[in-house]
Amino acid sequence: GSVKLITPDWSGKLSGFTLLFEALLLQLAISMPVSKVSQLVGVSEYKIWAMLDKYVEQALSEQDLSTIEQIGIDETSIAKGHSYISLFVDLYQRRTIHISEGKGSDTICDFVAHLTKQNGTAEQVKEVSCDMSPAFIKGVSESLPEAKITFDKFHILKLINEAVDSVRRTEAKTNPLLKGNRYTVLKNDANLTAKQREAKSSLSKLNLKTMRAVSMRETFQQLYSSPDLFSFEQALKRWYFWATHSQLSPMIKVAKTIKKHWNGV
Image 1 (cartoon, rainbow, N blue to C red):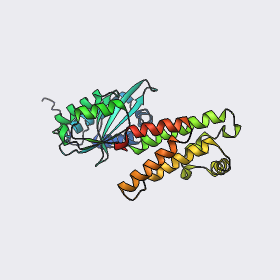
Image 2: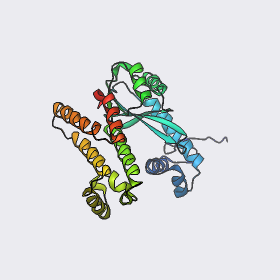
Image 3: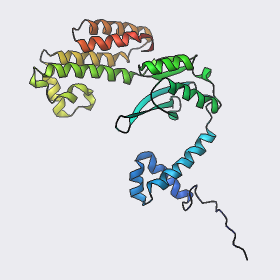
Image 4: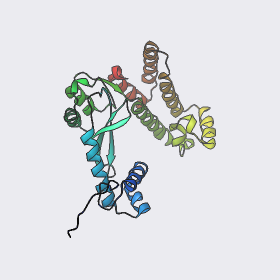
């Protein structure tokens, strides 16, 4: 008689894999690179990626973005900084909903096209959190007409920290005490080692430009603990005056950058 082939209900999406094994691979892929998963289970990276692609395709076919109102946008580099991708995140459910190649304003257009395809509209997006990238600001303004931009505080603090480090590098040229203490001044107190905490305490007793810049960063961080919007705005204005009158060029520059985007802070 003829041979009849059937697909058992425990068969996975890729030939030779069971559903249970694929569930294991999916869980592992969440927490480690595919190359590590491959070494751990003895399956080629090619096969694992092929399986992941099938599940991504299934998830996309079922994705419904009709209720998305708050999104976050962030760029990240791949291939050692030579290529960029932009991530679009549902801030309410804390999940990635789209990835676009590049970091220009066209990535927002690409997101809107995807949003429309998945039952959403550009007009439904009311809030966008992103960094101060002119490209993102332009893209949101042009493609998401109802959206209000709020600048992510972690990106703002990153800019301020870069300014602090610039002050430190300049001062370290004439003050050897600052050499080797980069992370001592850039990390939050809660993340310092005992040795770094001791070094920071010693530096704080000296009349250093770097420690003044550190105080400005720490004061800015405290703004987000303000009890209400009015208090926040008043504290922000005081901080801006302090930074712009500090005679520290990097701090003046970052303060003016923040002032240019005042409404989104």
